[in-house]
Image (cartoon, rainbow, N blue to C red; front, side, top):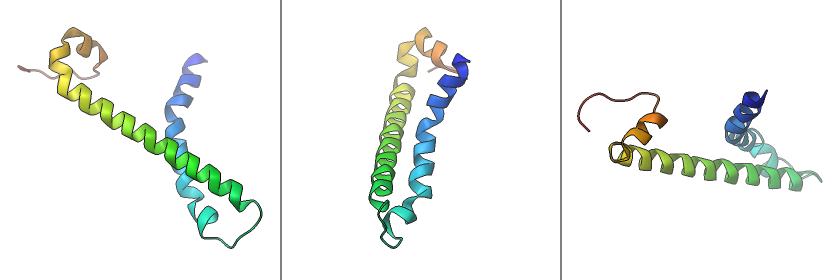
Length: 87
């Protein structure tokens, strides 16, 4: 059960991105109606959250790839695929 909860949190930023794209037209370009202000707010929050997560993920990948060989065995424990050859 705990792994399902963690998997849900792992895919949450993906759902934020889907939400921002799916409701973009409804939030910004549809004719005005009372609930549109709330939808617009949620779309903006979802887009910002997904963008922050994407920036964090890309930053981590760049740092990890740049320092993998210097981190030695610790980086090998974090790797799914360990490249062969001299670093």
